[in-house]
Image (cartoon, rainbow, N blue to C red; front, side):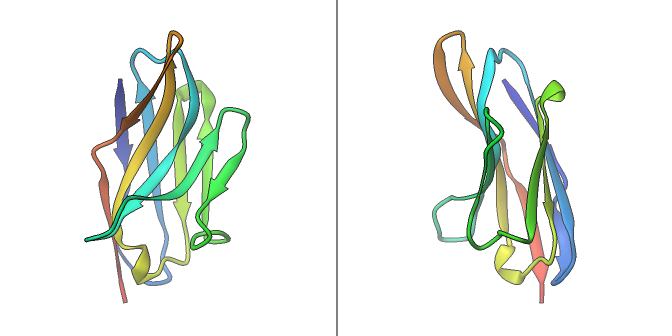
Length: 118
């Protein structure tokens, strides 16, 4: 399995960025896919995730500012981040929860840095 993430970078507060993540490889079906982030010295936390039935879950801190969308045919999710704040700074990890035949597995991307300057 591979997760190809793109986007991220440096932006001023109030600006926008878009992340994308495409999954490929031996994936029978996707149960959930989305984004987590990690601030320096902190644990990884949920940002936004899509579940197989189309439900989306967002961290309270990003509701109304971030939008996760998906292209199921391409096994790709997108995270549109708007009204960015310095506290959004961190490493963003693409997350995949998928079935390999009947076995449920987790997979993490390498992470992409998002830096929001004040």
